[in-house]
Length: 205
Image 1 (cartoon, helix red, strand yellow):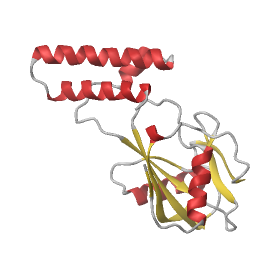
Image 2 (cartoon, helix red, strand yellow; image 1 turned 30 degrees about the vertical axis):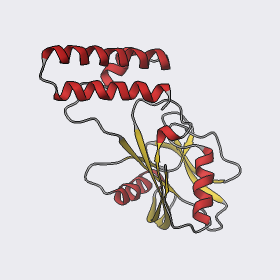
Image 3 (cartoon, helix red, strand yellow; image 1 turned 90 degrees about the vertical axis):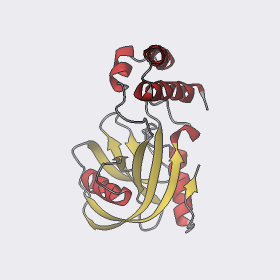
Image 4 (cartoon, one colour; image 1 turned 180 degrees about the vertical axis):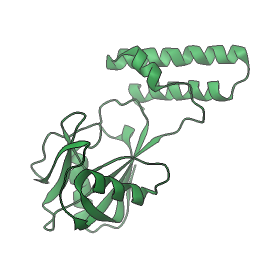
């Protein structure tokens, strides 16, 4: 567990204590621990302390990991991958986003692909379940699990959604600047190799 993950773990422990502790003295200590964790986040990232306070309000339920669900879509010759250009940073990612309440993982990835690319897809199989801390992503406030499906195009036509800047096919050996909060170039190549090889097992950290 690196320093950033330790800070997030400290914040989660403080939240759990505030959620379940009725003792006012214990609550005061957990409040102090939470404040220290937010100050450490600010110092580690150079971000705004108040933004972290707004992001990590006192929980109403046990704090858990967030789930990011994404689609790997390969060209018919398996030489290119479909990417979307993220509006938030102008960099590229595979289609997807946060898991939606009321939608299964398969339903979420179908919906995200339709919204972001205009394509109808069939999730062929689950390629990977990754813990983001196990990969060299930039620091992010949330603790994240990533579910990545291999998807086959079944209909529709390429049409960018309102929340992306562009969509395009890229050769696997000529990937653009990736939105590394969301996906890494080496992860895309590993996922593609796994899919092309026909491996049936899921990559799990």
